[in-house]
Length: 405
Image (cartoon, rainbow, N blue to C red; front, side, top):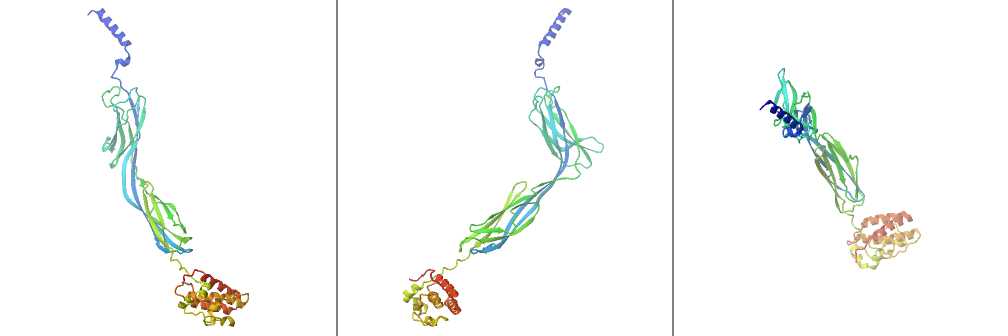
């Protein structure tokens, strides 16, 4: 080929290169670039984990509280914190920040972080087992991201430390197909004393009362809820008052304590119960009126008294006219505004009361001896108010309901 033809080919080739786009020339061969930085902070941490228990008791655990009465019980809450583990760890933590400086998305982005050490004047070398590999999502053109890391290791006596990371991609400009990228480094040192990290070192306590219906439950000093950071106990008294609970029944007073551990949120509960007996109901007293006894003479037989028996044989202190009357006549006394009239009213009620108390089929609140004593004393007082007051009481008893036919 002569010189002219060669020159023409060179010129044509140059013109073709000038008009072919750059992207077409480098198709499949273009890459991107990376920049990276990192931080490193050494740590020595001591980890202590605790567990908690809680117990609640009450003394006494059973009481009798009749209507209108009050009983006192004492509650005790014991909470205990126990150390279940105590460990420590040395290491380094920080973050690695990477920026894609090109116009292509990264390929096979990978971060291999390594702890290095040296003793004395030697060279830094990798610390065996102290490495971490991070394979994050790919970075788009111009995109940046930071990745946290943490590596624990066993310290080397007297060593100096640094942390290095290899940030690589396989489409780095000038190194297509190879793992290539920046390798930032950061020095760090380990603390001379540990940082204490405790788990469940504290707890919150809530004490809930369930007072049964018909009672009021009043604590002397009741925290209700409080925070604790160590083992301990709390005691307090509680008054249990029977406001409206009926006799002859049983109830249960329950107090429940819940301890919640501060970090894990685990609940520990315990309950203390008090059995409440409202006591036996008082007997249902009975009594028959003067009208019953004067119209049912046959019912006198079990009492030991006779309708013709004189008042003076059972009661003393009555005026002679009344004392000489029979018991049946006394049941018909009318009364009046004088002392004698007051005695008539009392003797009418007293004879019925005496028959009620003496009859085995009547549950009367007084004995015959009680009636004799009270009536004789009232008659001897010669005081109209005293006499009539007792008559009213006995009349009430006599109208309690007659069980006899």
